[in-house]
Length: 418
Image 1 (spheres, rainbow, N blue to C red):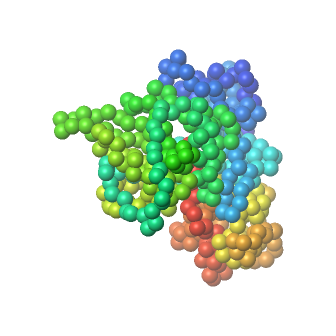
Image 2: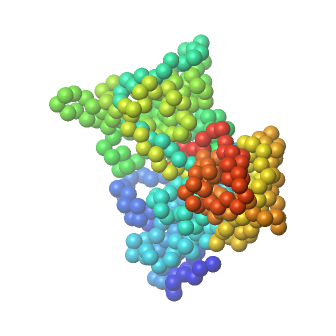
Image 3: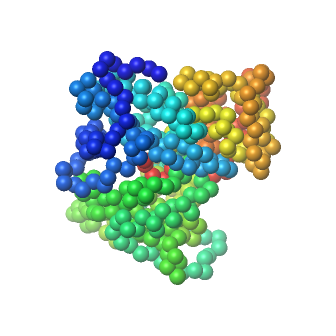
């Protein structure tokens, strides 16, 4: 592992250091919070939290991770959700981040977690550590009253919507719907830890940006059963021409087509509003197909989930392939030597397990672990990476065949930022 500068130490975070951690977080990220803001407790498990202590003992940098079960094409893997990564302003450009990343990957491997995932504050940071852009999200600004296409088959049930102020006591409802909605979507990380279920409903006044308190809109069946929800807030605006409120939707989740349509019909027709800002939605989210006039929106594509393969053979064997494949991948990995080498990947298709083994057979495809990670959830096509010169084909036709096998029918997405 890389060395820290003289006098710096990598140490576990202890319970008595949590107040300093919270203050470090506020300072590093320039959070506009008052001392009495009432922030929720530090959510990262302490046995997965680490700090770099400066020579004077103060906190110079930190990182932590959550234990996740990550849905992948046709399966699920244990994953480390890297989070709370920060370097103090006066300690930057000294190699602290590299040491923390190497330490995180080593501990992730020791725990038997085969991948690491994160949401990046800046897109250019994590590629150099072998993370690939594994999922994208589409955002849009939609005008109030935007028309939706009629459904092919009407739902006989009369769905209705209730609206309350978001609060921690609704955590179980939100979690149950969130789990049901994302069961088959790669990248859809659940909030397994109780503190994360509360964290997503936490609404600090200093972070509202002048908007109202966070609201929870729930789509319900006639018997009251929740079938979808949205977390949203409105920002008041009264120009001379009249009310032009903005609705910011931070999460929109539904378990079926009817609930999805009812939810967006509600969100797109709130009184006093002019525009609705969607959260990051999957590239195949039903909303994009329902909108009659997508040109009238202002779409923006962003990176969503970044993924790092920590154990290449186990990770590849844990996901299914969309089509038959028999290919040898020559993988480069500068940080995890065990991943480097030639791997034979075989699968008869999506109904059978994927077999992965080390091989002396000539390579069909050469690529860095970063590019392999980008394809892992099925959201990035291998052919596109090859066209960009990031993947080298040694056997004609194998990039197309492997690219088809590594794709998936459902676009990946993580619905929340951890």
